[in-house]
Image 1 (spheres, rainbow, N blue to C red):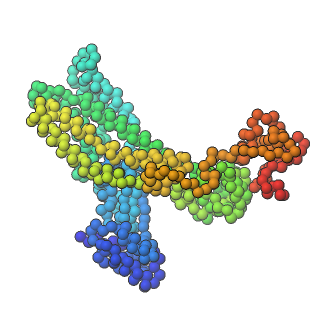
Image 2: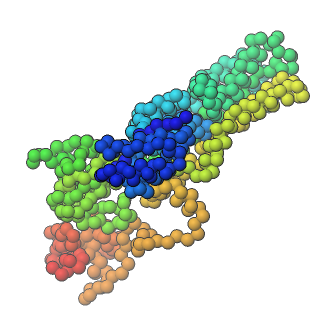
Length: 567
């Protein structure tokens, strides 16, 4: 069946451009028809089913034009294992106009590239819903509505242990055997704590797409049903099979909840680096309008706004200095500990710290367009990368659950007809269902990538693509192209060459002038002067971009760089 797709094309100026784009598109494999409209800057394509849209877009780029492509990041609620990831990716990928779809189980997000003229973001969200999952509107909503397992775990663990003690205690310890009804009562709170797995299993069954929740629900549910059958209708079963398994169902649910809780903690730590990066943005900005200053949320800034930044404040957006002289600490971007001098015409980056002078800055990039937001996005995109081993795991996960269900059924039948009987057959089938949960298969690689990229970001290393991290494992040589890249992150005084003074006297006088300064060079001088007698300086005055001057023991002293000495 042929698919009809609209593709936006930028850069066309005349009829020859139209002909060139049409020829390029018709040469692409799988394109049956291509018509280009110069007025609307759109191409109408008829494609064979299963055509690779990336190849079609590549043809347009090779012809010298720019295909219009949108990218979206959609938080997805309800995914539990690698099977869920594969299902969401398939649901999105089937839509005409979707170029690529990558789902990350660790961050619980779908990263989608699509043609906005062919498919809408609302339609992509609807496809996720139809697959049995819930797309959320934004990061804040995702954080607010995301599942928390802590409360359920705190309810499940003590009652699971109590159920286990009631069932197994008399076998191991000198304890009386109590009525089995007490086991049922102790196991019920655990069943309530694990309710989400049964809800998810029902949703998976409705969409004929089975995942980890199906295995957990079948395993634990079977244990509970069998146990209640033994308790309420014992005569329906042979005498040797009248043994309840409440402790098995309860311990299963408690352990899976514990695993999910630990996994949730790992996810939180993985995204902590991104949150810390974004936390560098100030929440408010001081905007100058018609000669008056007013404070507004930093996210409400628009390009062109004039922003007043006082000494010691973080700059709220990327921009250009219009008025004022200061030094700006850009160590979060460059790793360089020495603040950079800034004056009219110099560019500044949002999130960096202003030094000693007030600046008037004209905002050029705000909100998600700032350098800081792009850094955070880069880390997140690197976390979403799928290495080849993960792609293989996802393909296996797609058929894993049905295969496991088949093996469990086969195990049950073999033990039933060839083994001791129903009770052993039930336990064997239960073991297959529970041991085979595909959580680790889906989580191991994305969790490792997320933790690695997150930790690297905290240490000032940004991976633009996950392939770089994967390749790093095979690297045996590191080449650094910039002097001073590997530093302690702070300057240190390494040599003193005094003229007419002793080394100690020169350091003592310099430290007197620098005492009270927050400049990194001042801190280096004070660190070197530790242990020397302290002297109080008077009339100390900072000279922006040059150094400092003051009076020590009646002498007028200057301390600074070559610019100050020449003056």
